[in-house]
Amino acid sequence: MFVNRILQILSVIRVSLGSLPERTGTALVATIGFAAVVLVFTGMLSIREGFEKVVQQNGSPDVAMAMRGGSTAELNSGVSLEASRIIGQEANVFHDDRGPVVSPEVLLVVDAPRRTTLSDSNVPFRGVTDRGFVIHDKVRIVEGRMYEEGKGEVIVGRQAAAQFAGLDVGRELRWSGFSWKVVGVFAANGGLEESEIWTDARTLQTAFDRGTYFQSVYIKLTGADTFQSFKDSVTTNPQLNVTVQRYDEYLHAQTEFLSAFVAIAGGVIALLMGLGAVFGAINAMYAAVSSRALEIATLRALGFGRLPVLISVMAEAMVLGIAGGVLGGIVAWIAFDGFQTSTLNWASFSQVAFQFAVTPSLLVQGTALALLLGLFGGLLPAVRAARLPIAEALRGH
Amino acid sequence: MNDSNAVTAETLVRASGITKTYRRGGESINVLSGLMLDVPRGDFLALMGPSGSGKSTLLNLIGGIDRATSGSIEFAGRRLEDMNESELARWRARHVGFIFQMHHLLPMLTAQDNVELPLLLTGFPGAERRRRAAAALKLVGLADRVKHKPAELSGGQEQRVGVARAIVTDPDILLCDEPTGDLDRKAGDAILDLLQALNGEHGKTIVMVTHDPHAAVRAKRTLYFDQGVLVTQAAM
Ligand SMILES: Nc1ncnc2c1ncn2[C@@H]1O[C@H](COP(=O)(O)OP(=O)(O)OP(=O)(O)O)[C@@H](O)[C@H]1O
Ligand SMILES: [Mg+2]
Image 1 (cartoon, chains in turn cyan, red):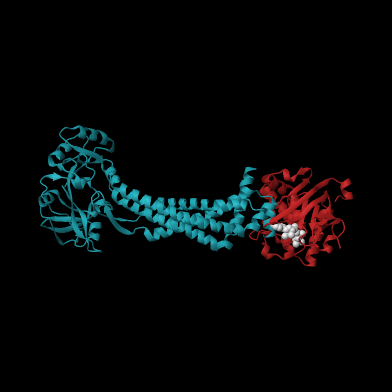
Image 2 (tube, rainbow over the protein chains, first blue to last red; image 1 turned 135 degrees about the horizontal axis):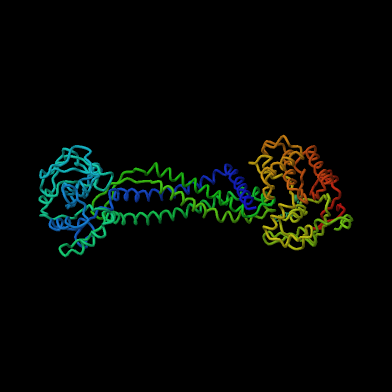
């Protein structure tokens, strides 16, 4: 009898969807309403996805990062060469054939004009030792060559090169009274590094009067699971005053502000638009119910219960929801996916280039949202359909 | 009004003291006022009366798709007013076959699927449903039209599918609201032949609302609406 119930519901759904082509007008309006919500929702969140992807791209759980005690960002941290050496002697630090894999790094920001507006923006300028390339192992020269130390040569990330005027191989730039020559462009697996300019740490320290001070120390550990004992040991070492965190967690924290902002803004906009779409759907489904009144009354006269009728209206609203979700998702994907932009990274007060990323999971979320809106939109009309006075509807009133 | 048949045969439908009042705006219209009716099993009853006299209203009350303002309708001893909405729906599926003037077939379904529709409420397996629907279509002379959709059938054929749909679950009573009202004489006669055969050979109880005296003579008896009750003679 249960199978039979399902069969009844399915056949009423079939009858109701079968007459959908006669209601394309209202159905289309509702579908487009859902699609618009999903478009905006997916568009907003694709910003977050894209930003997080870039920032977190090269995070690694077996890399630790040390900054001055209490610092939350590299720019306002400072670590001495001595401290960096002591860190290198800690247990659980990975050693290769040249010793501990520890990379003290200088980070500051310089001005460069944007290619589009020619207005100055901050670009992160990082100084690394040759050990830095063991830690940042995704960095590859894609144009020109590697810098030679001590010669004022720089390599630029390909996103920085694309965004800022003058960051072309062969060009010379002046910062802090020194002349810098761009000798190469590097890629880093699409990660944050691609928005930076790199040179050797000592040259940078000299040019910008940093003595032997660094901003941070990156440490490759023997494994992801040894982080805690490494951290305990470093933070209890009386010779050191540093905070230690996992590199991937540090990067994740950098995305939190923008992610929260986008989630809230996207949520509010999706809510307001969603409300509009739900009202549109309620309208469309009421229209559908009244145009199907005779058919519903006939089914009810034959002995079909209220439940199959109710479910059939909900099913139709959900079909419209899914259709709108898929439509909105496709449009979002075509319109936004890969859209190149940049935003201020609050941790470095400098630009991070990224692409909107309409990911499969976002598309699923968008469709689920539309489905939910469809459910809301279908509820009241479905109840009306179920409670339709049969005799009156058959009469055609 | 009681009829002499009711004394001997089992009463299938007993309507007593039926009142139906519609409220529109401020005013209320009394359509039925204290109507009495007994329909014995095996009856073929024609209901006549001027337009607006309450014929369809009464048929809908007997079929359980509308509720009386007061009074009682008993069907084989069960009081319809005591049933809730879902009990009433299940009762309709088992016991009542409706034939409407405008047939009300579902346009997107074939003749076969239209006729099978009420069988979904019976619990018969798929093969049995198909067999019964085909048999019903054969009975109404449309064995060769099973795959047709309503739009591909003539008005008379559509109504015959409507008859097949009404009888396919083998209900106790057929309620026909002007079943020939939309058909020409020839097609109408074919439907009346069918109804007469269903009554005469298969023992189906039939209540038929009609405007057409030509149709009414096919019934075993005729009752007329007069001021919200039924009488045996048409008021002149
Ligand atoms: N839902 C309704 N609301 C208000 N009045 C109604 C409603 N349904 C029917 N009526 C009125 O009740 C009266 C009887 O209607 P009914 O359809 O039963 O008449 P009928 O005898 O079947 O007429 P016809 O021969 O034209 O089909 C009419 O005056 C009609 O206007
Ligand atoms: Mg009528």
